[in-house]
Length: 248
Image 1 (tube, one colour):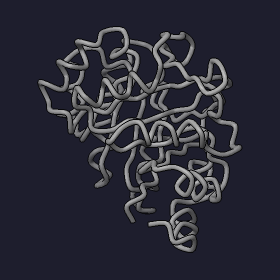
Image 2: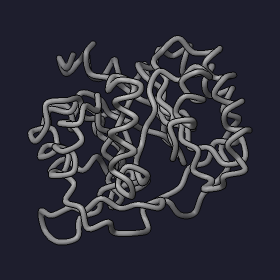
Image 3: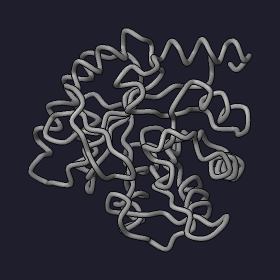
Image 4: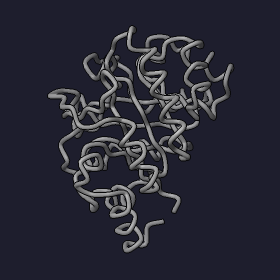
């Protein structure tokens, strides 16, 4: 199956949390237990974000990534608060296959270029937190989805693609945690704007939402958190549903 199902672990104080539009965060599970669960259930990729926003959590988060990388064989993408080349090197050395950069790239575009030049684009993912500011127009938001950067997400994605990033993780702030389905229009437009893989994020509530986003857009993967963590659906449920819909 070329369409990827991607669980995402949002970490605060070495615990997995879930929320809605970055708010009302609730403690869910131990990240190592979930990493083992996703390895056993044959997830295609695993994304792990440090969303604490605290610089003093880096050492603890780095140790967690080392432990997770020992558990999983799937590609591991890591992000959250990466601001220096040293930060990236530490994560890749700890076992991450790719790092995800979001706000830091917007605040300092040269940092994104330096990261690609230093480690190669195949190790650098651009994460975009997108919010619709007017009908059909989305801006990239920074600082945990709280600040409007003023950047048009499609122009930003094309620029990052030209620099050499390998993939885009596109999170819809408007749909995040709502469980009403992925932002189809947003993901369709993004997947048609770039020639690198796009991972749709935000809105998964049941297996039909996965088939919908794959049937209606050209995204290569779909990310989910709470419904997978709480086993409302499993990776295997999703993949079986996609096979029944002839989505590969």
